[in-house]
Image 1: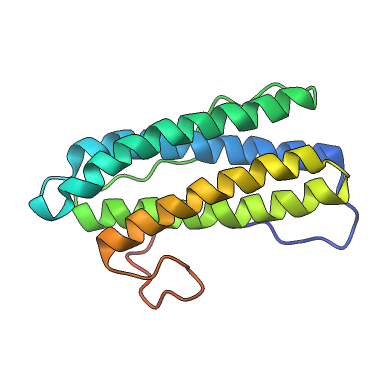
Image 2: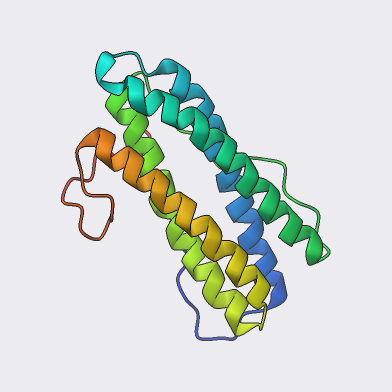
Length: 164
């Protein structure tokens, strides 16, 4: 999922909740990918990151719970379907899929923080800022395993196209 483009119209709570629902679906996707990839990375080069991905899966579950809690706070029922899961048989493609997913998640959380602050929902903004810290740690772990720069704005390599 690409990041949402900012709109000139004021954000509504319904739009904020819809964004949180999409964020929750991305967290489910991350959990699934990390569970699969942590077990399928099969070369010595990637053994360290494989064990790290198991930790990431647990952290993503914590993120999903935090987002679901916020959705419930707004009186909505949390979504139960993940965003489209990307799988691959190629080790590097698995890691690129995870890195791209982290990039998208961070972009979307930054947008959600702006929306929350616009609506005066500062506690939500703080929750999301904490999640971004962990997501950036995930970016660093994945980028390090791939030998690329973690920050997507500074990264020259783009990896395989999504879905490949």
